[in-house]
Length: 424
Ligand SMILES: [Zn+2]
Image (cartoon, rainbow, N blue to C red; front, side):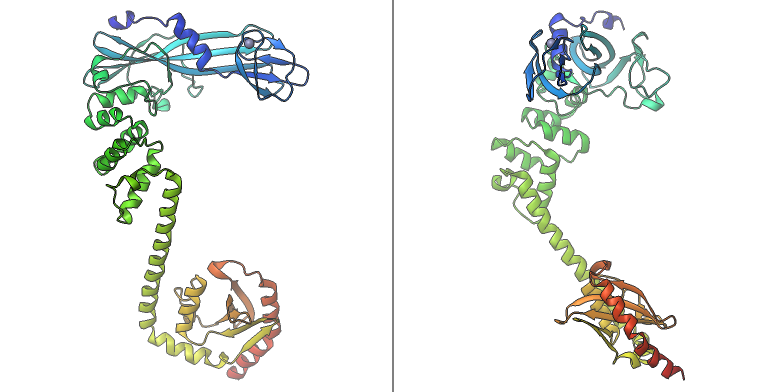
């Protein structure tokens, strides 16, 4: 706390940077008038421009078509200081109040300091969060005190602030030696710093300037598996920009036994394209495996159902001659249990796996077109004489649905006769 009293305040240059760098720069324009979010000045409207320059303050503005009269913004930025052998990561909350036709008002307040010692331990000095909670801001009038990061049940992670770093950053010599640079902004600076002081892998990655990979590593680990590939990429001057996709891609290379020691594969010019290509290949293989597995399971089921086969022949055998037709479509009863398996596999539904051949009052038809392609599978109930289900490929609704229904309405009498003949 004594050292904290001696920390340098925000310099004029840093404040100027904050005004320029972290807020929105917009011109809110209607047909009649436009105004500058940076200085509040009102000026003549701009015709169809995407960008313009404020005639009063000279700021470059993005034009927004809006009737907005005010804009309040609340943004963090971070200052890096060194004092007494500590790296201090200082987070400021900056507020800007812009009003049309009035001077813009800026205020800053330091809200959190993260003190990192040379062993990577962190201590927090911070203000409080208002007890009404979720407002998101800090109590600017509360004291800066040493606080526990876990003391706010409703605001876990409140101290993990990741914001732009203002110029004039001071970095602990040991951190510099371990490769820290403010250019690495793929993850919160204090997270990188604490890690760099204790972890050689992090140091290697930052020195290789693989910043996206560093963030991926800190979040998910798994460096040893990828070390050789990262080294090859670095040696070939390949910067990994999207580390999570690249890691996926290396895993896919491994899956296909493609050499991950070969720069040709490790450093793809179009990562997304190569990734998606392999992903697609893998999906096809997985689908093929799934089908083969299902086939094995089905065959085992077919082997073990001798009793059901005999039962099916006995109960449904007399319907085998039934053929219903309607236009180009015709429907016939599945002749045996094996046909259930074939129907289920071809149509990708559960007519076989759910053992429809065992159900007593249920008659299953395969509906096909004039080229004998399967169109739908129909469950017909022998008690109520109606269609219970009519399913296309993968349980979809076939586009000939109405036609099929009509076919069964007309064919009901034929089926009823066979059923009643047996009964009598
Ligand atoms: Zn202006």
